[in-house]
Image 1 (cartoon, helix red, strand yellow):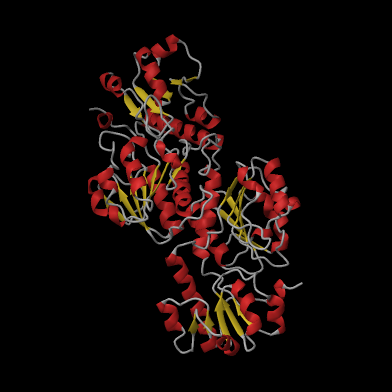
Image 2 (image 1 turned 90 degrees about the vertical axis):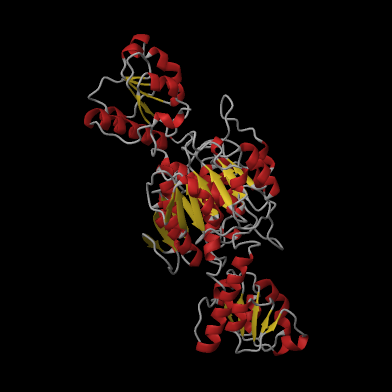
Length: 298
Length: 298
């Protein structure tokens, strides 16, 4: 087994039954390894040299940077680390919601949008969604609508993603926690955005491309009442933070730090969760977060 | 009775047993009125012409702009509107906390400070404090310490204000909701601020002068780990927002909008609460928020 990171003590312990080569490994190690713990981009660089690879466990929650075609051909099983950063990302989503509601990012007086008792629509009801929902319900007494394929956590109303258009006009706050796959690309497009309520707050902590870049820019210019915040941006080669939105008063952005940038406490907890999940699969044959490869192909 | 504002329908109804002159009034109206509904600064302008004045109900929660010496001499009873803006101000406090924790106000990557499960110290456990506490406990599973003379709401630990020095070092987040009076002026001074934990977040939604202006500037420059946000500023003639702090990365500010600036929904609710309180006093002889004049004198 290869881990591209040195594991924290707890992670080492969880995998102590296995021969784990951490951080520094030879071509021969690669050739022989059957299990890989890594970030998705590292997998793309390593996979061609790993002829025996059977299992990948990512350190990250999102996996859209994996080389899915090759993974499918080689019949490799993949587990994501979904949930490991959920609390941190949910706090970040709330930071963006309240920043926009109260105008804490601009030295100007702006209308305050009330939050308590209002309605929130959460796109993607997984680990992050359930934590966003918990804060909404318990902290701010909100009515919580979840839109997802499967549901983790508590929602007042649960709907499938393809019924969002019926409910989007009810929401005072919309939080996008969607992973990027063929179903979610450009999910928030111009047509859908025009169905939102006056004074809506929209926050994206999922993946940049789940919001259409040109459409959000267009609607932010047309509707000063609509406020949009994002921690995730659109990618060319890599995530490109240099977008036109920064000059707009109804925009707030952060540079993809929701997972807990530079907080060792958060990173260590996340790595340990990846080790726990992998260990459970290797020892007991069951684990969370198995990735459905076909969601990402074609 | 004189009200300096036109009352919303609900407020009118609550006071329909009384002769209320709204917004436009003559010198003779002033001379004869026994009850005044007004903002504190208006009281200063009107009081000399109100020889029969017995009761003041303010629209605002804070009353430190009232002419207390004259009020004492004339033996006028004063009720504040404490609590009417509590939810809005508490949301604002949380907006500042999360803005600082996650760096949503600056286009730079900064270390994310975790919030969930941490310890919060709330100075002033009245209406605002209790709402801040509720969000902390229910939304973010925090340990909540309240420091106050009297307590509204739920706290894990309750201490008198003069014991804050024993607990201030425990807090990951400190929220100042203090009114300004002789006990609270410069409450957060240099000595006390040096006792705070590394990576503490301090937010002021009480009154500017409860934090010493020079001391907070000094410590923000000395300790980049300490992050400070405020919605309230220090006054000369009037509140002066033009302070040196704006250029610092560990500062976030808003221009005294926590009460719900420009949100008619929030303002109307608050005026109605003032009417309800006054009506209760006039009809039943009991009301909340009687102001202790001596707290503000000498």
